[in-house]
Amino acid sequence: EQEMANHRREQERREREQMEREQMERRRHEAGHEPRHEGDSPDQMMRRIHALHEAAERLQQGGLQDMAHQLRQQAAEMERMFDRMQHRNGGPDHPPVEAIHHLSEQIEQLRGEVRELHEKLERLTNMLGEPRTR
Image (cartoon, rainbow, N blue to C red; front, side):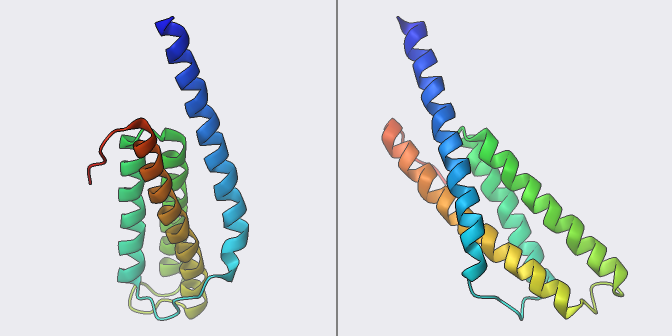
């Protein structure tokens, strides 16, 4: 009986994660309508990428491994793109405006997703009756 309950909880967790992934995908398509932050410096962008890594760690601690992994992959891709653009365009003192716009759009999209993930993690911890630590 305990084994059945554990299996049921695991199945529910997987279904919730699948739902979360589908919602994130839908929101990703809608995110193109968010405002740009065109004046972002390379330092600001790197701080945001770092914040994405921190959010992924919180999701991992909250038991949402799939979403944490996805967020880490997105942050890593942003880092690679940022590095390529910096290298191709003369380094951090002369970032290309177009590259900054593109990265800013991606950052804003990820910020929205991180906000959404925080809200969902809060709801999940409330559903489980566990206090959330920050």
